[in-house]
Image (cartoon, rainbow over all chains, first blue to last red; front, side):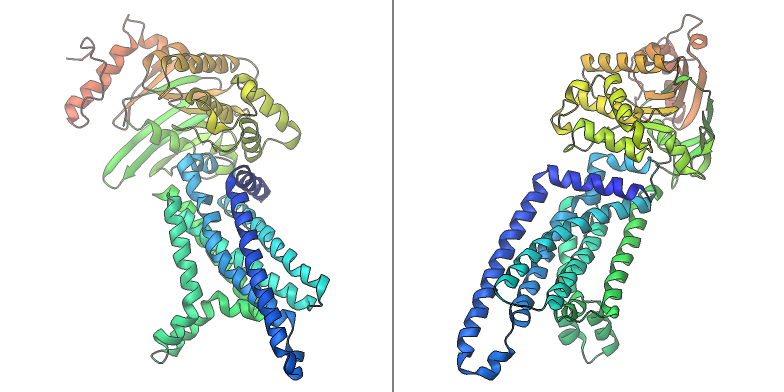
Amino acid sequence: MRHVASVAGRELRSLFVSPVAYGVLSLFSVLAGMFFILDLSWFEQALFQLQQYPDQLAELNLNDLLLHEFYGSISVVLLFLIPGITMGVYAAEKANGTEELLLTSPLTIWEIVLGKFTAGAIFIAAMVGIVGLFASALFIYGDPEVGKTASGLLGLLLTGWTYVAIGGLASAITRSQIVAFLITLVVLVTLLLLPGIAEFGIAGSASGVADTLRYLSVQLHFDPLLNGLVDTADLAYFAVMIGSFLVITKAAVESVRWR
Amino acid sequence: MIEARRLTKRYGDLVAVEDVSFSLARGEVVGFLGPNGAGKTTTMRMLTGFLPATDGTALIAGHDIFADPIAARRAIGYLPETPPLYPEMTVQSFLAYVARIKDVPRASRRTAVDRALERTALTDVRRQVIGTLSRGYRQRVGLAQAIVHSPPVLILDEPTAGLDPLQIREIRALLAELTAASQGDTQQTVILSTHILAEVDAICRRVILINQGRKVVDAPLSELTSGGRTLDQIFTEHTARDAVSAAASPSEATDGSEAGIAP
């Protein structure tokens, strides 16, 4: 497993010598900034309007109204940016012919898969770090709850990592980066829409199916974290999702040999 | 150092490589010949463990490539048909990465990279991004990644394909130098695939010729050419005859020499 770091290091290096990483990070910062300002002004407006209702004003707080919205928007931004980050992770190796180098080197497939996932995970951590900077600005002017602020960030991190694992699999099953991008986007949007599908599409006919669909949706497990509730069941969901996609990715990479 | 044992690769009914066996001793430099589509690349991919064999196996430096792949792969330097390069990396950082994944110990990694750069005459462009290099230079980086960990076994798949005559000469000189060095301390065993016969004349001492997936010739170069026959004639004889009898692959032997066709 010592080559996990070698593979991850190269992956990150390639991201940062090309404009991709900088492009994605700056685009992300701008989008995050816009959402932050919008949510902030919305919060301010709410604060102003509720001046005449002291009992409701007391309910108003930075976490539930501002950060909840902000983190929620960020999770959608991640959904659209991550396919762009992960599309090349395996597809480019095939295009460069470096797949042959990797698979004839003394590396195990797990080292390759985990190395590449680690690189993506670190990149997502950097993005969530940027979100953390925005959130921490609130501590200067107000006093949001540290726990809720942090658990929301954890939720973003786990959501991002899940998306990275899905994007990696899409990239492993195709040679084309565009195809990998589109597959990832479609799957992630479907995941986002699952609760809705469960509600309106299948509800009534077979509640077991609806329950399963709802359970599979990232949203259902991200929301408690947004509300400051760190439940082992939700953490397990993310671990199982990431783990399953990595296992399938490993099989997909290996399958090149058996064609 | 390299031992192919009845290597066979079938894709459904299509036989790519059939029952190919050979054995290369330490320090041998062997030319692996055959027309396009004869199964050269498939054989080499099986030797490196990139492709699984339908039947048979190969031993690299004593390790079974399928049963003990990690140890076997550690002993291999491999230049595939298209050099495996990351266009966005610099030559030096790419070689450092390859040294790392090839298990070169941390302490000797820098020396290994410097030595590979020097042997492939890449020291001047070490900080250049691979994507900006010419094709000839890229091919050299491909060679450098194959030798960076000083493997006892070198497997080179058409190292001069697609290069202009000048670049071919450079690469060939480089190969001659690399294989000459293998006479000395490192003793590298080299198997080199090509369909350019002059290359074999220049570098190799033994020839293995395959046609339509089967080994048809395996002999020292000196023995083959002892009767005054040229490699060209031998190549044509073995590939043309089979093409006629099997009536399958059209005009792979394009050398146009009619002298060698057997009765």
